[in-house]
Image (cartoon, rainbow, N blue to C red; front, side, top):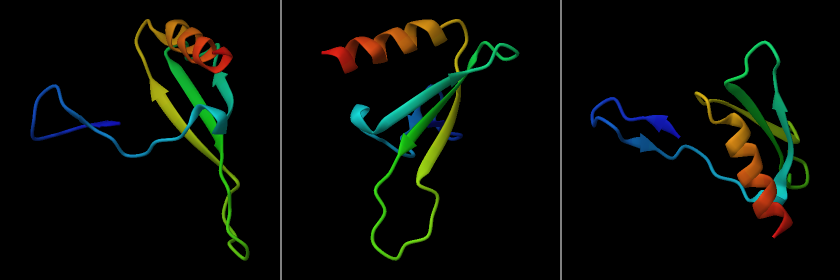
Length: 76
């Protein structure tokens, strides 16, 4: 999601992935409010593109809660 510049407090969905395609979550000690989600993606035959997509998200004071929610849903 990214903020909508025209409408206050609204964000636009720019991409989505399923939890099973989530391969890794990286968290930096230097940037505790930053999470990097690494997703694997299926490639069609003959397509040369990165097999993984990375999305960096900045969250203030909620990175641990986000990770715990994702892990809880994956276990379900």
